[in-house]
Length: 95
Image (cartoon, rainbow, N blue to C red; front, side, top):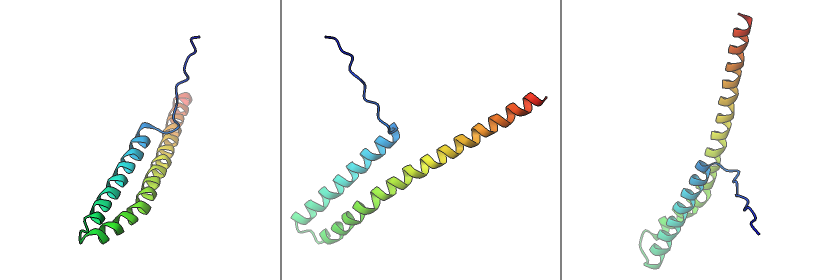
């Protein structure tokens, strides 16, 4: 019974997965610092809590925008490059 295991192929690039992992690690660290500051009744706890809430909202949006713009520019650059190659081939054919 030797069945080949199907390899999992992600639809995300390695860079996207690394960026997502870094975002998760940063947010988890932020929550941990806020929790410790709240438990120890640090005077900076309210500011840390506000920073944590703001980062929980802004960081995922920023990561999403970064990935969206990277894909947009990558597709546009690829199309421009293919058009340039096509126009050069047309010039060579005419000569």
